Image (cartoon, rainbow over all chains, first blue to last red):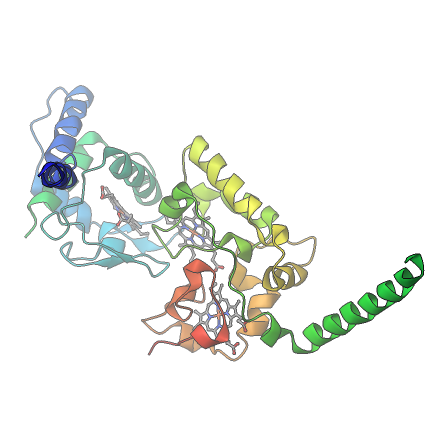
Length: 135
Length: 173
């Protein structure tokens, strides 16, 4: 009986959701307000345009977020070194945007590489808003 | 007792010379069996497998790993930069298991194939690699299921574990 109880507890702990993407969005929202007093919310439409925009990477290669993450974010993507990337859409991959450190690391790298600067909190929030509601 | 010593020395010299000759004549078969030793480091595992398969540290000499780790912000045309603490930890791990710190035959031959004044950033540019893949035409790497010579695990299923023996090679269609 004790054992059963212990294993139930353990299961609960394992199934406890990691910080869901809403937590991350709230953090970006706080930042966005600091960056821009006129901040008026995140927009999935702007996030979609950002995702689909054609860009030139620092290496000179034609690219964009869609390039490695697949034009359809519910599908798997592929890096230039031929590794499969799990889908970006939260509906297809609930692990997305649940680890602030990971999310920040890749925004830092991919924004520097493709845009030549850090992304703003507004851009990050729009991007996540788009992918969180993509079906 | 002492008087046996020269004989023993002589016999062991003959033995090692014959093995040396045998391996150089027939090296590809002899080194083919042993996989690289198992190694693990969580930071390396998570940070160096996001964009490609994990490359075993025994594939390149320590000076190559240092140069790779010093240039992560411009890594083969991409930004793979890390914070300083992780970079140092992974550099220490890679250099301490590098090809020139290994005693296995394959790593020694890799090191021998690299001129001392050269610091390759790719295993796939070493003479060792070129010699062992000379029967593979460039068009084969371009298959969708492979992509490039750097995608070792497409043909060597045990590549991430350091297993490259001939019997485990399978070229995907």
